[in-house]
Image 1 (cartoon, each protein chain N blue to C red):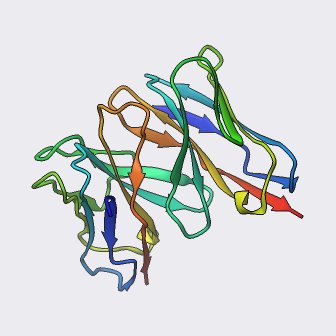
Image 2 (image 1 turned 60 degrees about the vertical axis):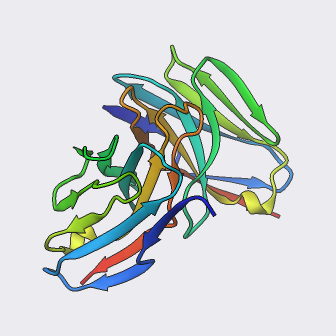
Image 3 (image 1 turned 180 degrees about the horizontal axis):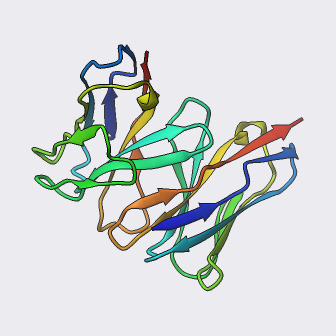
Amino acid sequence: IAGITQAPTSQILAAGRRMTLRCTQDMRHNAMYWYRQDLGLGLRLIHYSNTAGTTGKGEVPDGYSVSRANTDDFPLTLASAVPSQTSVYFCASSDSYSGADGYTFGSGTRLTVV
Amino acid sequence: GQNIDQPTEMTATEGAIVQINCTYQTSGFNGLFWYQQHAGEAPTFLSYNVLDGLEEKGRFSSFLSRSKGYSYLLLKELQMKDSASYLCAVRDRLDKLSFGAGTTVTVRA
């Protein structure tokens, strides 16, 4: 089934630990995105990639890094987790030339930093 | 950047109509989207407007006025399954989406 797969589904992480959230899509979309969703704040863009080999910073990039070695994968790394990074993380992708389709979202990763 | 405002909560009765308003300020407008998100799930695409006017898709319609920076999502013949959060999102010329905080709609029997 075409779509986006995120892993893990949920995770409890000790503060100070390193963590990589995985995201893989099989739709051959050019662009991929990482958002975090917090109650009352909505979805906020962390990092994005318009095409393989390029990345850019979104609205809330501090404490996070990404890479885009190929079209399908877009991992998000927390180098040293802090409690304020407790959130639900959504990966999304888009075919930037399709206009009306918007983004396709993964099912999310619920991360708790303690 | 984008500044997107929508009401926090709305309540309506099954079978009724609800209109969710969204106002935005943007430095480069390239389309407006509405997404539906049920609790604990991912957002799913509902509608897209890039030109002024009304787009109708079954029980859902979305309206856009670019000059006023205004959109609304109209949900007709409400069903219990329509209880969800509805997200207004504006796309910029770099194809990035900025989201409002979402409107939680509760449908009561």
